[in-house]
Length: 345
Image (tube, rainbow, N blue to C red; front, side, top):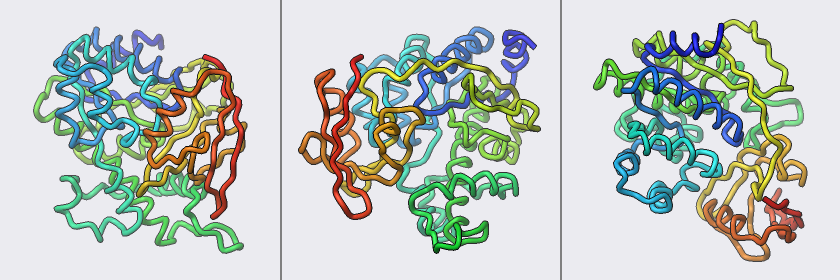
């Protein structure tokens, strides 16, 4: 089926969820093109954002209303704290939404709540402290297996020397609950928007892991009565993809990723109590080629201590093009200094 014919059919769905690998410029370009095509078919649609917690909804409203300049908008969101990826990847979409007055919808909860559930379990968090999120629909066996494969690569997973813990390990159970809280929060935000605006579709920008196979957000939407939601996945040329896998997505779109450029390090950062930690390393990035690992802490840049993801991003952006950069890492209780050669723009 041609892409245009497919979008004609999907424009009337209550929700169309657009997957992404967060660090991929090609994925965000595809999202923007798809959003533009859907808006032409459904002018009343709104755009939901995984990366923004619901407490910041007023900031999104002010941006769409034209009340905030770009820098003030990102500062009001505290972008580097709520989302560890380069804002420049998302700004073309956010500018389009502002220019066309597309309502933006904050889909998520604060990361502190997700981390708390991962550490303590959902039952240990009182309902009054869950930011209004209700109990998630139970995870399927397929989702648990998918999350277990992901969980095994996290640095906080214990290894007794006899292999990683299994599906019943309490730490893994809490991890599943934290992911489901995230899924449920996004699904409930979409469902609430549909309740308030029954004829207006919601387009969502959401990471692959919450969509693939329909186990995450689509599963929670079905439990909320929105079984007609569609989810589309971009897929990079050259990667293995079993297009016949049942339920992988409503449709898969091939995209071509440009080679890495600029001063992007290629990491996703989180800040914990004044410490900056690497939570993801992009394949093929400068970070991967330089040996950076998930779980590494960034202690200093060019000998100057850093205590937040924002400081790291700002110092990378201000670093002179073509000059080596000194990066001090905290790994396994030791400090390790690397000299990185940053490419020009």
